[in-house]
Image: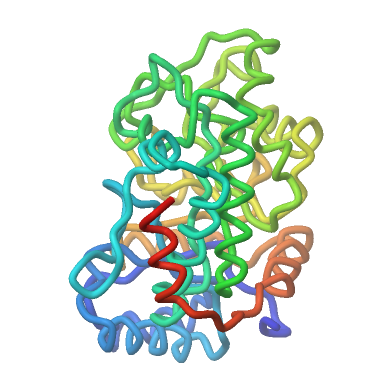
Length: 329
């Protein structure tokens, strides 16, 4: 369980391979709900276990530690210490039994993460791939078929759960039609509401998950003025039409798609209905600004507590046998 007192409406990173005294003191005061790690924080298994332990010690409880370990370009933990995986789209296209392959992939991913002290993986990506999908995202998707996206997402989630790792589905309510890299600019989608239903479908199919991540993308048919992360109209679609009542965090608040200071971006996202702000670059000055957002709202805290309560238990298994099976799928 989490702390009895309210927790900060933000998830933070740290700058390097170890936690500095100034970062530890800041985290102790700011009480972020969780932490997120990147390649800059990853070197060896012993180092990574020490870092995840130190992060939790700084806040005084077993706080969630997140990572993006998708496979392909987006995997922060790499060989020789950890398994590497094909991009999700390539895995699905080449697998003899995609459902089994994605379950095994999830279980193998979870083994590496859990042993390093990481208990949340920012997958599955439930965006539907299209001809126009920007290359930064396309092979990170499972399929061009929304039903297949949902099936593969569910298989991956169930595999990870068997290894004690929780998922964060992304990017709500759908990023697949974006033709701009949202790390650098703001994508705009002109598709009709009827067409967008295909993008929403995988998220609706997995709306029972406890955590999700918003998309920095403008969907003209919903709100032509604001990206989904900062749009009350888009958040209502996520809650009411897609039916997701889990913890909704922003995509990285410092990405180039958004305008204004990091604090202004965070304030607008929370006001729109996001529960939590994700800040990834480890910049202490920016994190000090984000910390001014204060504690989660009562509703957000309740969702966060449910996510903690639903953390899956690790189930021991013959991991070498699974790895051998995975190599044949």
